[in-house]
Length: 274
Length: 183
Image (cartoon, rainbow over all chains, first blue to last red; front, side, top):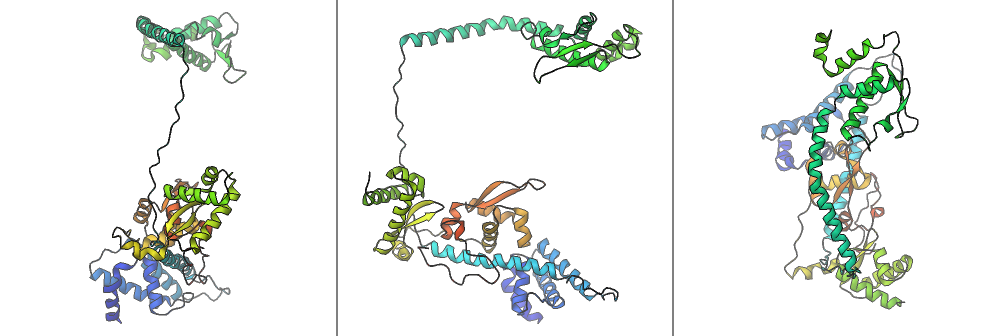
């Protein structure tokens, strides 16, 4: 038996697509009913194949080893004696393997059909497509010289604006340095100290303030809310934000303010202040 | 309005020039008829091509139509000396294609579970040959890619559409390939 197997190995070894393919070969060779596989026998033969592969110094894909382990596992669980008190029969340990083998077999058979069809239909020939150019219709432009002139004026204006913008940019760089979170917190606390609620989006309106100022102002507002000195309200999403003063509970007014601000701005300097 | 004969003449010329399959909608637009009428004209043409001693025939692939030579004339075409046979696929490729064809769209994990082997390389090959393509991602963890067959798959294996796939079952594998070429 060993020699016969080794013979088969030398011919077919490389052709197995995977462990299922090898198992099927063994099942067909031994004319075994797939639904009643003599696990012990098949496992032995399977292991012999793996051994032969090793002898031939072929790399054995890990999947083959996994299958070997599965087979041995099934074999061992079939050898184990059943307990007497287990009246009902447990599931056949081979069941899952058979299920997978049948599923695989289905597609293996269908693969053969596909192959036949491919051969049959390879006798049919097609023509390459012609390069038919897509004709683009030309539409005449109806433009008066006046419109062209207007366009030119607009372009020039835009160009001039951009050139002038440089000086303004400089201004803005200077602005940016002035905006600090601390100053904004002071500003907002100042407004709040009048005891009235105010509309954040009006005070920090994009018309009056630079972008960096609005952003810092917003951060300052959040800080103040965190400190518990104000409440905010935004009735509509993306709508106006209203800020209203709130006395912190149990905290003295005034003395807390400055220190809180200091802590936010310069955590290290707090000690010097005290 | 074109007569039926004129429409057939136009379609024949258009399909010859096109080479690639032309969708039914496009043909209907060209001959200025509705889709139902166009489909009837095409069916009549297919029949005529088949049975009136012509060297070419009409194929439907996924709702598009294409002219090709009749398979029995292959040997004569081969005498041109320019026919290149495409390299066949491996056993693994056929297996993988079969699994994808019947279960599409499928993940690589599904294919590997049935085949019991890593299928990375095969899938890459099939993608290269344009027999399969990616079809979005599964909702499962890791959002794995899904694969499905292409029109090229239908063309190569002689199917008009996926509905043509032979029924799949352990005991009902058709014994012979369907008769070529009119299904």
